[in-house]
Image (cartoon, rainbow, N blue to C red; front, side, top):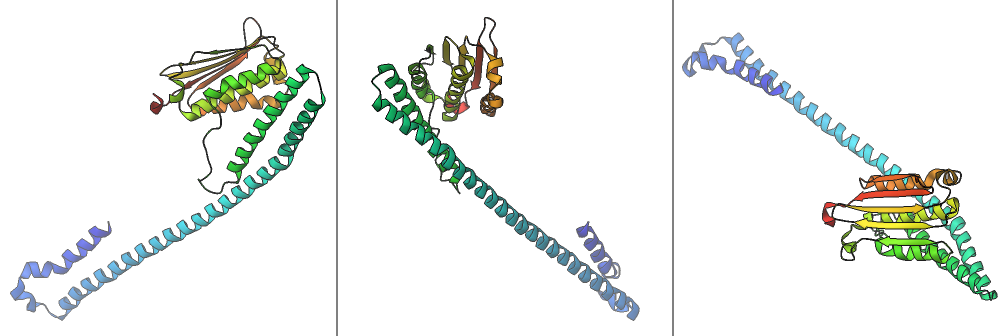
Length: 287
C-alpha cells in the first residue's frame, strides 16, 4: 500500500512533463510551478514518515526481544534455584537414609552367622549402593546449569537379568524369559532400553511389595518393529497395589512408555494375579 501511494504521487508529479514535453515546461505559470514543487515536498515528507514508522517498529521489536530475553533469564534462574533446592533435599534426606541403611545392613551381616540372613543383608547392601549411585546421577542432572550433564541412561536391557537375579536373591520365585536375540539387544535405542528396564523394575517392586505373589514371570520380546515387556504375577493384583503409593509408579510407567509412542496395559489376569505389559515401538535408527 505504501509503495502504491508513493508511485501515485510520483506519477502526478511528472505528468506535466509527460503531457507538455520538455520544450513546453516553461509555459507553466508560477502557480503551476508551486503545485509541482508541493508534489515533491509531499512525497519527501511521506517517505520520511514511512521510514520513521519503520524505525519505530524495529525499535519496539528490539525492545520486546530484549524484554523477553530478560524474562527468560529470570525464569531459568528460578528453575535452577528450585532444582538445586530439590537436589539438596534429596541429598540430605534420601541420601542420608539410604547410607544409614547400607551401613546398618553391613554391620548386621558381619555380626550374624546365619547364612540366609547374611545373603539377605548382602543383597540389601548391594541394592542400597545401586540406589546411591542412581541418586548421585540424578543429583548431577538436577544441579547441571547447562547441557554438559551426562544424559546417558544408567541401565538398559542388558541389566534386566541382574535386576531379576537381585529380586530372586531376596527370596522371590521369579522366572526370566528373554526372547530378544543377543545380536538385536545392542541395536535398541538407549532410551527405549532404559524405559524397558525401569518398567520391569517398577513392576517387580509393586509385585513384591504389594501383591504377595508366589510366582513372577518377566518376559522380553523384541523384533524390528517393537519391544514387548511383560511382568506377570499370581498375587493379589491391582486392589492391593492401588492401596499404597497413590498409583504414582503406574503413572510414571505409563508416561515413560507414551513419551516413546508406546502403549502400557495393566490390570488383573483372568486366572488371578496382575499383568503389566508395555509395547514400545523402535525408532527408525534402531533398525
